Amino acid sequence: MIPRTMAEAQIPHRVDAGKFVDKNQQFNGEIDSSELTRLNEAVERCLTSVSCTLSFDRDEERHRLLVGSCSTRVAMLCQRCLNVVELDVSSQFELGLVFNDEQARQLPRRLEPVELDQNGLMDLWSVIEDEILLSLPAFPMHPENECHLQQPEPEESYSNVQQPNPFDVLAQLKQK
Ligand SMILES: [Zn+2]
Image (tube, rainbow, N blue to C red; front, side, top):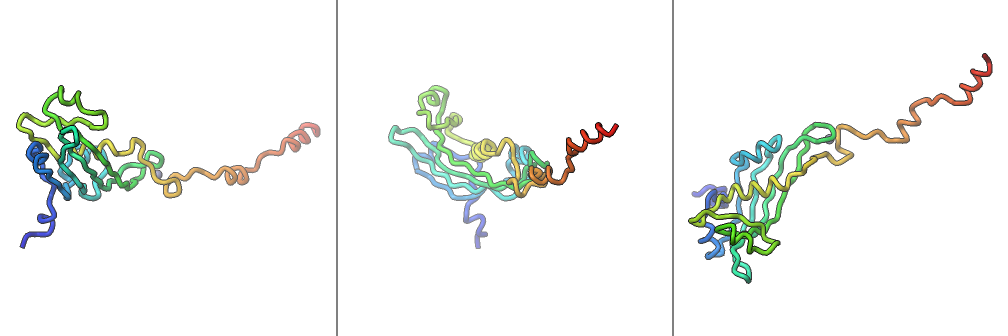
């Protein structure tokens, strides 16, 4: 029996993108996040694998496309309290697959260019990793009510402190 995880497809690492575009190849699968070195360096820990839905295609103008989405869950350090905060990260993308700079320049603006090597091969894991890295928050933080460093309530901080009464001070001065 084929293990379920294998049947459900690990997203392949290096792919023949040119061929997949012609076949309109689609993928629904996962990447083991421990394989994504740059992502592991950018976060405290990866908590789940990266789930991906990918589709190789062409648009009406015959541009080669990789359209898809990916999501994962990571632990980062909250920039307010410096404790770990767990975050869901996801990205949707529409990439234009090109063979050279000239083709990249001709892409419409909505398509982000990804250059294939001369054989049409593409490092799919690295492309997905880039998308996740771009989606990480620059200043990860807990939601305010979950943060370990609670902002003091303004009313509370004032009412708890005994402010000297300016009239008492005046009275003391007059007694001298
Ligand atoms: Zn926090």
